[in-house]
Length: 381
Ligand code: GLY
Image (cartoon, rainbow, N blue to C red):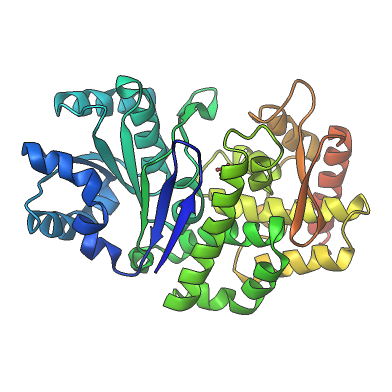
């Protein structure tokens, strides 16, 4: 078991990581369940149809044995739940339940459910508390911690949102037993990200132990999750609102990755974590092109990503576009600042930095070379 504090003045909270934690939800979340219990009201839980089908029965039983009744709001799986329409229905449902500013809403699921619930709670009555219970590796090591909440609109993903910190994050690594392997690998990309951006020793540990993490071996999995969250908690405490070039480090691989996601239509063709994985390879290679990272280290980053079964070659995606088209997607990135875009690059494995002098036409030329190298079957690893 690990308890990691997120030390934000006035909004400090804990991330609890514990095998089998969901069996003890009534005691672990007691302070946030008690107000409902005292007043005999049902506790609002939000899930998607998948997580509801897998976990709701047992959770209802565990809560019932502590005298607590849960009421469920269930959304369809996938990004379509992060819309104005679903947000409105969720807010109306919470209001109808009589949720007050002293109450907490429970989000059980992946990043979509966490983002939706977090944003609803940010705006409902100008701020209601919430508890995150993430059920994917990606949500456990990234989106459930740090208070970024959002929905999507026709103009793009996560463009309507707020910083709203949860009051508690409950992580049970055992819930990953039912996670499809592809989603496990996609979440693992974000774990590798922490090693690459700020901890060379953790990256080396992942090179040696990544297989065990992906096989969900309890000790390795818990160590990977706890190390990832400890770094995220430190960074969020230093730069909650991403104004100091600290939290931005968490976007390593994301600018290249978002362009690839946009080009593949934000579809199952390329999951977010897969796009981030390939984005990190591209960031490493581009850092080597600028002479800031050795070619050997760029190759080492790519090898760790490929070894996890994640995409490490842009050509393997079979994109019918050139570098300029990918750069065009980047211009719509919400991190764009006028005509420029900060890029997360590497000085070393375990040392990322924000580069503000990157010429987008050079990025287009670099991507053209990557696309052509792959087509010739000679893509560097
Ligand atoms: N997912 C990046 C962040 O939380 O800042």
